[in-house]
Image (cartoon, rainbow, N blue to C red; front, top):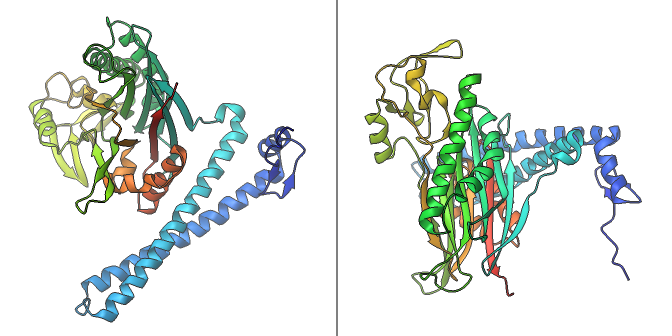
Length: 438
């Protein structure tokens, strides 16, 4: 017997269809479905606004208790505990409301663009003796536009013909032109640069990734000069490759190369033993954020003639006025010290800024780290700064660890970040692995 597939039901419109194709047609073309989707979105947005107000009030009440003279009294602390429980409940509902809004937005895209709007959210790939599974979740959040992107299907071949699997999270800013071109060009440039190497080694792969990043940046800067645009993007990239040569631990063992440009981040979850002797999980950071306030980054920027100052957060600034796109800009700044694009900070002298040396105040040179994938490693998190602005490395691991699949883990991390107060775009990609067994 052939097992029956899932029922073709539109639960929003309370209608059942004879086939999956007719259900998809209904969701894309039915005015009745569109109207119901809009009503659901309006209702959910209203509920989300109510929850946000209630969360703000509860946080203020907890803050007032902590600052009160009698805050240490038992009855007061009991009341605080009740408020914290209520706050956790509301934060969960707040995240769920946003998840519904994100689903509505995705349905609108599918209705408008058809099959071209379908997003790939999971992937499996075999490298060496390991099978890798990846899942991603990406929310627009409270911003007006979605400038995050991700790459989950990078497939490269070494000069010897060995498979390399790639995954990336990209966080655009000042527009989407740069991040969209990176999605289009970076995989091809990685393969192009890798193909020029004599073999697959850590040294040659590192060279290829660095060259590909600079090539991709140069390609966009050429476009940015023609259009006079300020678009830019960060990148966190993971390449899984098999160990080769005499130094390999064993046949089919794998390593991961992490390349970072900007303030997206990679965190590895590794099994460990807690101080009490019980098994636990540790968060191991595999990249360092490129912030202008980082001591070595600040020295480099200032040596080029740039300014580093706090304006809400640490930022790199042009030291003087510029003229860009037909308008005068007194001072232009950015909250990351490395990025793709960002023409005005790469070539400020071209636009009338004096006192700077050639070579740019920021660059797109990736910092690269390579680590073994060992038996104690559990999963890898790649995420944009919208996650790391509100969650620690350890909190991200906890949010993911209890989930049954990579896509559920990614969604749990994004939802947790939103509930924790992130107003940025949110994208998380989770990668795990198992023995292939073949």
